[in-house]
Length: 520
Image (tube, rainbow, N blue to C red; front, side, top):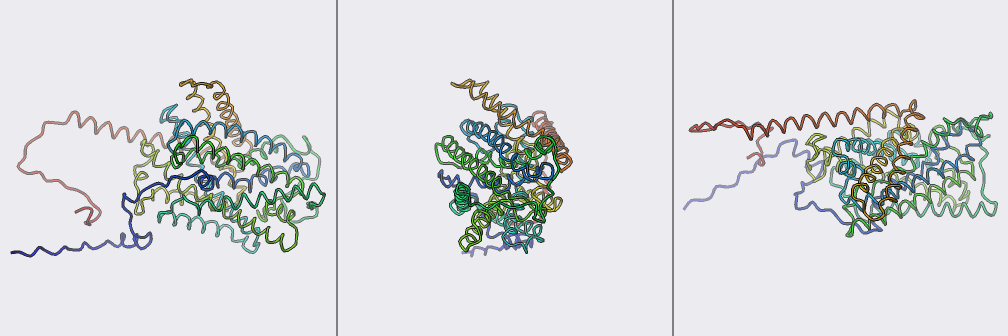
């Protein structure tokens, strides 16, 4: 009777040992599951990118107006906000139809691909990929502004703090962080609660004539404020367009729910549509409330980027008492939390979208592979590198990042609107004419906003997106041609292979990086 040989342990490579130490134990495919979200949790988890934009949208409008319009900027603030809210209504109405028609994740990319084909869809893909990269940079930078507003001593280290936050978020996602469940919903509801309290208290104090107003003419450190008269109530048309383009950043993130319809509980379409409507309503209320209080208090942005306009509004509304200080700090904490959470949303969206595009053979295949912890590790690494590079390039300034932001966002809005218009014209369901009007109006308005950004903000950084955007689309097309050529050669060989020659033995060489258990 023979004794069975002992199993020989295969030694780990140094690289694998480091990966296991750095990222934790590997997961197996059976552990890959997606948690289906209830509507309240989905609202908290999927909307921080959109709702948090109310923290800096008003400030960006004032940054565009004050140097040219002077004090008239506060008067112009409200009508510009009104136009932005009108666009919000149209875009939200358009995406209400998207989530009903397309329940697979992917948003405007899937809409464009299904209606215009995979090549035209690369315009939406490029827009979304750029949007995700800039979202990380903008949200993280704005979160740091909230921190520096409460603790000014940290202001000079804003860039280092922002980059550090991005790296921590990336590391957490490489370890398999799941953006689902109540913990990720808490910052959103906390922020909504604190800003609602601020808006309500501010309006009550304004009604009773008790709301303090800043005297910006005697404050130092503010952005330059024009003191001469100009045209159109102190502002040139270009200045108004720049301010409007800046304010368009308030609408970023509206498409987030359409990108993740598949995570909703059934019925997915109606649930996603309800959450999208509630999210847009909350965003509209917060943007309108913050702009109104900025108009009443004359809260102005600082040249250094901090304290923020939202911070100045909160100081004015809550006053100098100890309760006021507590409420002010809670506003800043909630703002930082939701902005950093909003930055994290891209670490789920970008790798997933990149994997879809790679499956269509427009990006490298490596982006379709799940890594050590069953996340799209390559996509997370690419997103981290690009967003950190963008932060360093712009110095971590929210105002410098905004031109990069909204062009990609509104291009995605436009592609979704045009795609849904084509969808309704093709299928002609009951009520299709009204839906085409809504979708086409949202698409045309979004296209106009993209044009305004490209012209009005060209010298302030939009030139880079204007150049990078077509180059990225061309790169996606070029990569697809290479993949299609490779597939054609393989198909030709499969159908036209030479007659097999019989040999006594075949010798096959397989190139491997190393000999480990998987290779054996």
